[in-house]
Length: 167
Image (cartoon, rainbow, N blue to C red):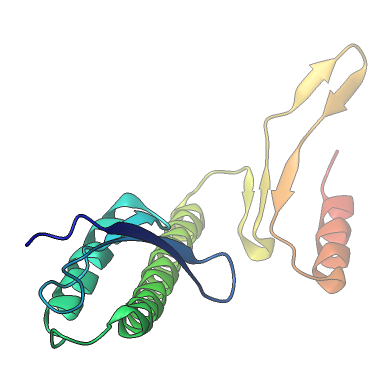
């Protein structure tokens, strides 16, 4: 005899921060004696994560014994998998940020190295200052300068060097 009773359970699993997911668990009359609940992950941080988490939660639920309610275990499994996934996502984001910082640093070092090897008269090698082309407008002459500064002492040094340059 088939039981046509059907219930739907919506479960939200939230972790600290903005990381959350939504589970949809349709329950039929065959649950829990004859059938595990179906599990649908209906919301999460991104589509790839949702798909992988749904697969992992379904696998974990299918490994639980039939005949006893598994909803509490389901929520605990989903939360554990979400915590693992959150840690993996955060680690991946940190790795991407670190790689971007390394590329940025390598680019800056390559640029600085190229300038140091340059015989360009606009580059003041001793002070790591780059001088632009002069622009004459009526009776005035404008010259732009670029220098990397990280503290007040470096600013004072750059200004002193620029004041010593011929106009």
